[in-house]
Image (spheres, rainbow, N blue to C red):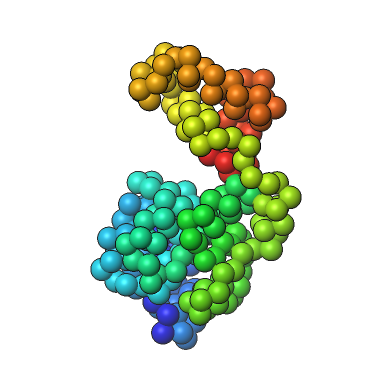
Length: 201
């Protein structure tokens, strides 16, 4: 029997998926969660074979939860489920040690096959996502440019961002300008939109 942890913040979708997966004779959902920050403690308690994680959850996103699982409960394999086919997400998932990456609109029968393959030690990625990730390439932004562009989401002025990040305003301005230029954007907001749409933030 393959024991599953299911983390998904949409209650109805989570319940439906748990019910459908439980119909499979070799799969058992041992714990269901609605928040990403509950994943590691639950995995430590239940020791699931496979964790099915939504990519966007309150508390902690699925990719960060996957990174922490790899360290804290390495025997648990991770399958990321997402509605977003953003190429950058796949690259981040691979870097986080994720074993499976599937779009949520895949049939449950396909998900069950992916779970079995991942539990057996394979890595399984939705073919259309793999192709998109290969054609898109890696983010052109440096880690610091990515960090500052992401931080600009919640801050108003350059000075406020600089204070919050303990950097000089000139450093923040230079990195933001470089990020905007590399992404071919005209404004900070446009650069944010581009980076988010590609899954680079």
